[in-house]
Image (cartoon, rainbow, N blue to C red; front, side, top):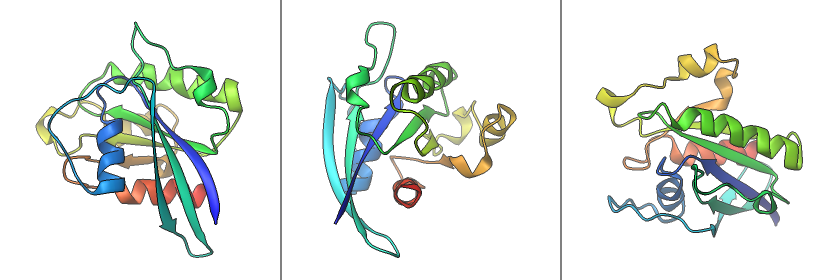
Length: 162
């Protein structure tokens, strides 16, 4: 079986842990728990050509007090860049993290997850805005850890890219 490490990266409280919980355990909790360091889960996915075990590194959110350690990124085959579509301040941090990954492990496959798309009235960051910033439309997936929208699709898409 093929094993691939993927990292979830983003600002604090964008929903990284909730996305992993939804994908791996098909559950969601309203309770917020800050990730300390890194939490690793795994799940096997079936692709057309083979099965793949994803080693999912849920890395703590970056903020002004806590920076992502480059050592967490070593060995990653790809990453999911999670942005809270209801909080503009999550975007610049995500872009910085994308550059950190590029400097640390080079060009690896990634997807942008615009999370919390279920909060329709609060959305301030849209796929069209990401495209206007130069990101390809096929890299952008709207997700909701709460409803499950786009979650399995996102993890399967990154697996296919690997």
